[in-house]
Image 1 (cartoon, rainbow, N blue to C red):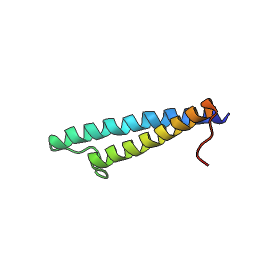
Image 2: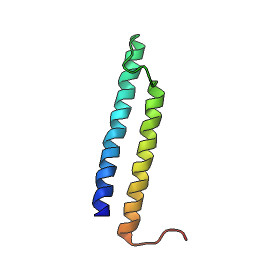
Image 3: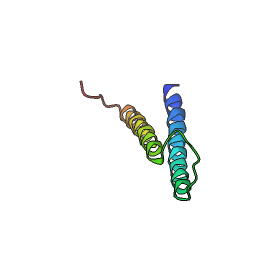
Length: 75
């Protein structure tokens, strides 16, 4: 049950991170044309959020690998 939930959360975060990165690219292109899509966050801030979410995805994947290998973590 926990591995299934982790897998779903990991997929959700992964898709969300790439949507944020895509939104950052579109925002930057709009800014180059003198327009704006979002007034709250700059493109770099959106990219930072995307990287943080991807860091969580990496951590979850490493946890799943550790569990599947059956090794213990540092004690």
